[in-house]
Each structure stands twice: as structure tokens, then as C-alpha cells.
Picture 1 (cartoon, rainbow, N blue to C red):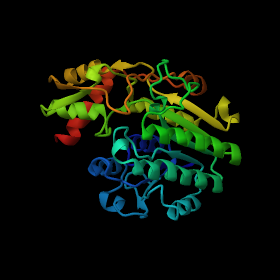
Picture 2: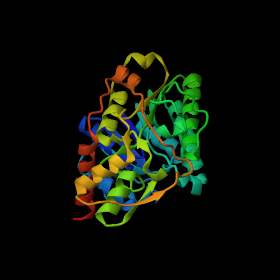
Picture 3: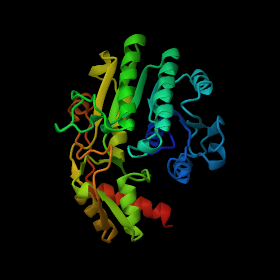
Length: 338
């Protein structure tokens, strides 16, 4: 089976590529390697997959992995209406997993155009390519951000999500509506996954896990928003990838439904202060905390109801915060301090 992974140099995309390759799949990965955060981290992930920076930096170059013959990488933008259809035609994918997106809630306040280009125009291009190339199944990343200020917990896919409070969230809600339309009109299967606060080795530098660890280790202050009165459904990367893999791999009882949506999270919200304490315990250093008010676009609590994912795919996250934080810190020290 041949699978396209978009966002292959990203956090989740990299880990999913590695998992699929371990399981024997043929994988083609694409990524635009933008500079939203340190591109050296993206090149570092690709290096783990056997793709050198010299190969990856050139647009539209077919880079062959030197560690797994079943992996190919091509630098490409989702907005590229000329070359994306050619890629689909050349490789004849069975399944597409769209993880590429302009990420970040706060950055969407500063650079809204980037979110429209990648998350709306780019996603439309993916849908069109799936439509015209008889793709069996499109799995795509949504986000817990679409729940906005929903006060009912845990968050359910049955909840109303018509009131996003960031442009990032609005683009993800749009993706779900667009996928529903294409499934209905063109009869191919789409599955949206609403990710909840993913963390772990190779994680993004703009997320709390990385920001806090980097600051604490280097004796710098950390910004604690809403005076620390926040809760997040922190979900370890291996648990996320196992869930995505099961959705890709398993034929299940929901196959008759051409359009599906699932929450994918740990279902155990953690107080932000407890999260910081776990980092302090793992590093052996105390955080210098600077308290800030709630930020525009942020939410006080996230909590995933993953009942349907457990029912349909036997999804069982099993990594606790202590172990997950320690794994991240071990990776951080090996990557940045050696």
C-alpha cells in the first residue's frame, strides 16, 4: 500500500512516516519546510528518515532515503496547483494523510494570510487531487481548537463548534466542512482527527513543552498565561501516532460512513502548573514564572471524549505525563546540548 503524508518534516508527520515505514508501507512525504519555526529541526527530522538537507532543500526534487528504500521525500507546497496533481498522478496513492498546515493559534493573529494559503487553499487542492485520482481514504488533521470556549467537558464530536475564537480554529472547522462536502459529492472516504495538545521528542518549539523546557534548562523565565489556571489534554506523540496508524490501517465498522470525525487525545486533562512541575522534577531545576493574563484565541481547558475512537479502533493511550515529559527532556538534551 502506498501512502502520501503531507507535513512529513513536521512533528506528527515525521513520527507517522517512521511508524508506517517500520510497518512496511511505501511512503511519499511532502513538506514546504517553511520558517514558522527553526528549519534545522525540520531538516533534523528528515535526516532521521534518511533524507539529507542538500536533497530536501530543493523544491520538487525526488529525494530517496538512504535508510529505507520505501521512503521518498519531495519539497512541495500544498498551494502548488501545478505540481501537486502531477505528484498524485505519478505515484498513484491508495491513502492520503494530510498533516500539513500552518499551525499555531497565536501566530494566526499576526499572519492570517498564511493560514488561508495553506489550510484552506492547500486543503482544497488535496481534496481535488483525491477526487481526480480515486483515493480510497483521506485522513486529515483537525484540532481541539475548534471547540473554542465550549464549557461542556469532555469535548465531544457531537458538540456545536460554530464559534471558533481563532482564525486557526476557523480554518480547521472549514476543513471538516470541505471534507464532508467532498465525501458526499464524490463518494470517497474522509476521516478528520481532532488532535489534543500533542507533545514529545522532536516536538515543535512554539509549544508549551518545548518553551518551558528550553527556558527552565537555560535559567530563563517562562510565560504562564491566565495565571496558570489552565488545563490541557496533553497527549504523548507515540499515543497519537498509534491512533492515526490504526485509522489508516484498519477496516472498521464505520467504513460504511464515508465521512467520519474523531477526537484523539489522552482524555486526562492536566493542570498547567502540574505540567510545569513535571518538567522541574525531570530537569532538577525550578522554573522562573512570569504570570500573564489570558491570551486572545486561547481556551481555559481542553478534554477529549475519545469514546468513539476507542470503540471503532481500540484506541488506548497509555503514556503518563511523568514518562512523556522525561522522554522529551532526554531528546532535548541529546539534540540541543550534545
